[in-house]
Image (cartoon, rainbow, N blue to C red; front, side, top):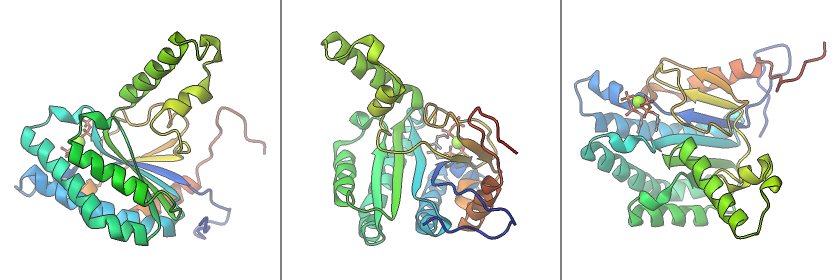
Length: 246
Ligand code: IPE
Ligand code: IPE
Ligand code: MG
C-alpha cells in the first residue's frame, strides 16, 4: 500500500481511489470487422489484468463502469451478451478474487437485472466481504442521476414518516443513502476511447476528482498506461477550493 513512485524529485500524491469509464469496446471490434461483443469479451480480459495490477500501483479502491442506465438502449443481443459476460466474470473469477484479497461490491439499480445475476452478485459480495487488499466496485445498471433520485426518494420517505426533518438533510445524510455509501470519493476518474464526457458516472462523488482522458480504446488499455496516468496524477495540485500556501 502507498508505495511512492520515484520518477519525480518531489513526493508524489497517491490516487487511493481510481474510477474508470471503460469505453471503446465496440469501436475496437468494429475496427477489425468483428461483432461488438468480441470487443466486450476482450474488455473483460482487460478488467482482469487491471484488477490484478491495481494493488501494486498503490490503488486501494477501484471502481469501474460496466453498464449504464442508458445502455439498455442497445440491441437485445448486445445487452444480453454483456449480462452473460458479467455472470461469467463473477463465476470464473470468484476464486482468484478471493485468493487475492479483493473485496467486490456492485453499485447501480439491481432490481432490473436477471435474478440469477443478482444472486451471483450478492454471493460474491458476501464471500469477499472481509477482504481488504483491493476494493473493487463494479457499476452495473448504474446512473448517477438515478442513484441520487433513489437516495432522495428514500430521504423523502423518512421525512414523510416523521423520522427526519427536512432541515436535518445535509451532505452526509445524502451521501449515506447513495449506493457508494461505504466508498471514499474517487481521487481520479479515467475515461478511455477519446470521449471527454462523464456519461452519468459518479456525478456527486467525483465533484472534486481529477479527470484523465486517453485515446486508447478499453481493450488496448494496459497496466503500464495506468501507471503513467497515475504518475501524472501525482504531479497535479489539488486545491479543493482553497489556496495552496507557498
Ligand atoms: C464500453 O464500450 C462498454 C459499455 C458501454 C458496456 P462501448 O460498447 O461503449 O464501445 P464504443 O463506445 O461503442 O466503442
Ligand atoms: C459509458 O459509456 C458507460 C460505460 C462505460 C459503461 P457509453 O459508451 O455508454 O457512453 P456514451 O453513450 O458514449 O455517452
Ligand atoms: Mg461507448
